[in-house]
Amino acid sequence: MAKRGAYAKGVVKREEILEAALEIVGRRGYRNASVREIADAVGLSPAGLLHYFGTKEELFVEILRARDAHDTERFDDLEFTESFLEVVRHNADVPGLVELYTRLAAEAADPEHPARGFFLDRTSAVHAVAREALLADQREGRIRADLDIEWIIRAGHALADGLQNAWILDPTIDMAADIDRFFVLLRA
Image (cartoon, rainbow, N blue to C red; front, top):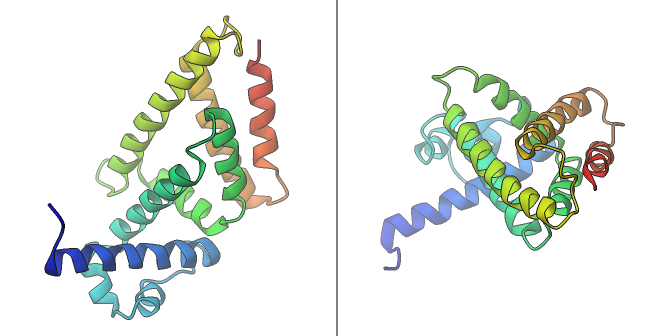
């Protein structure tokens, strides 16, 4: 059934907010992007904006969810490792979103933090996609048979997140090149 009336308008406004927030946070960063600036960009008051999300923390979680949806849509037609590399390359263009991700990932260690569920669900989903692709690559002889797929997934995830942390401090680091080197080590 099609969405109608106030509900449909609310969904559209929420998407408009997230699009503006992706641009503002991507450009200005987590600390420099204010709820007021995002609200102003979409013609709302800060309270009006938070009506759609509840809290600033929940808004920022939804920004990350929207970022992931955009990345999936943008790079979904590529095979797994190339898609992964393209996302990492793209991350260098949106430093504020990388900063947001790394900050919320650290804060999600708190079981009560609003980002915790997002990161647990995201990790599970990304690992499932990686597992399927890497097992297929291993069966086809593209990845070394002596490597444990679960180790590859954990090591790749840790490498990607660690590189993002390092890149925030030193933007001359080529995150994609380092991850590509990791993938080369996996080849049969």
